[in-house]
Image 1 (spheres, rainbow, N blue to C red):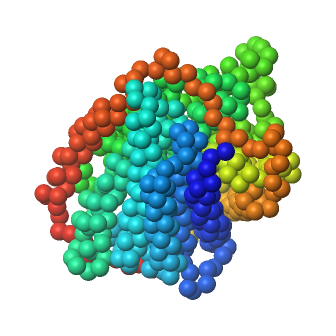
Image 2 (tube, rainbow, N blue to C red; image 1 turned 180 degrees about the vertical axis):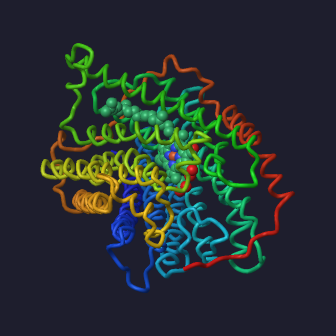
Image 3 (tube, protein in one colour; image 1 turned 180 degrees about the horizontal axis):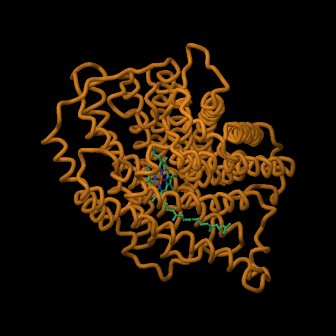
Length: 550
Ligand code: HAS
């Protein structure tokens, strides 16, 4: 087991993650009912307030704290315990991120920041909200530097050696994060904060959106890559086999580092002010970032088959039956992967220049992100929770809790299937996103959207309610694992950190030469962004004033 200090750090991160999860999922429940026109909120609370809280607390805060908990535990496990400097930086990072989170939450709840998680200008929140966001980013940077420092110290002690796969993947994820954040830091510090505090009167909207999406797309891979770390390093261990290919795993992370950043314009395909050439270039690069996910899918199928055959599975699909279905740590992640098949396919549709015209800003996109971040990522994190907390607390994941965990992931899957299918269909029909319920003043066509077997108010409400109940069950399991479950006394009861062996003997050393990959990533970013961004600055239209619509 890892040292007590590192354990505490990881546990505090998990604690904040799940507090955000409770508030965020409750807001989600309110949302489906308001959107169905079956709930009137009290006058002090409005739809856009809860929508902002839902997006920020689940997509940004729950994920970030959970990711750092997982990475902290995994880095301590694979490279050895943290020294005092690493510890200090990681705690500082945690504290600053938490202060930022608390301030942002207060701003949202007090109605001063109903700007949704994308905080598009010219909607204007209180200046303190943007300060809070900056603190969240600074905090994650401190935590990232702590983990990178730990890695550098290990490399110095082990000159010329490839690092363990977990550490390698963590470093790739953190480099991606640091480069991605430059966009959001630039817009928050140089555009939003001066504008929101009234130091300047106007804001360049197109530039702010572009800098946001420079950050916003790699942000989704900052959520996805830790899930992939578990798929590559934890799943094979649960299946009793080695990592399928160490080089393939490392190469896929390098490709994410290269191609996940210069693609933000695929979120802005319908926007004026960016010429089709740059949009098209970034669409091409978006199709490149699909490749490492396909490599991951291939690697997972290979891992399943090797393990199933080793256990006696025969025939074309006989190995499938031999997978450890009764182990909720595996089943949860398997379902997460299965959801990513339609989730990823939806992403490819979104990225297709012409098809984007149909789906952009509709509920389809909401459906898309619920079956990407809301299930493949979130359910992988749930699967990790079931062993990570017992590993850190020394408590037992009892048989009763395991049964509840199966009910929890089952209900999450059903709820998500119902809700996201309804959202996809409604989106295709034309129902908009980022709005409260609208029947367009009783317009017949708009009302017909909700007549379908799946695309109706009831399905959404049932799906949303099941999801909330499932979330509460998860919170119950988490509370048990943190404070109540009996302590593991016998050796076989003690939960391990399942890390599979990975054969590095054929892995090319250049895969760990980060300067090459950072260099190529920067070159691609410059190619995709330098000219269009400088055009937006040099030929800027008159800036926009602000709107506070709530
Ligand atoms: Fe996306 C919008 C394109 C992946 C999240 N995306 C969003 C938004 C979010 C989001 C939050 O091009 C909304 C932003 C907003 O508020 O406006 N997305 C893509 C593409 C991918 C993709 C090309 N997205 C993600 C992931 C996310 C995420 C991952 C979160 C974690 N997305 C877009 C575009 C938009 C967009 C446009 C803008 C739309 C608009 O107009 O506004 C790709 O990365 C997807 C590649 C994935 C695959 C799937 C591989 C499958 C695997 C599973 C294997 C399964 C196994 C199990 C082994 C090709 C790895 C087998 C089981 C059996 C049962 C057989």
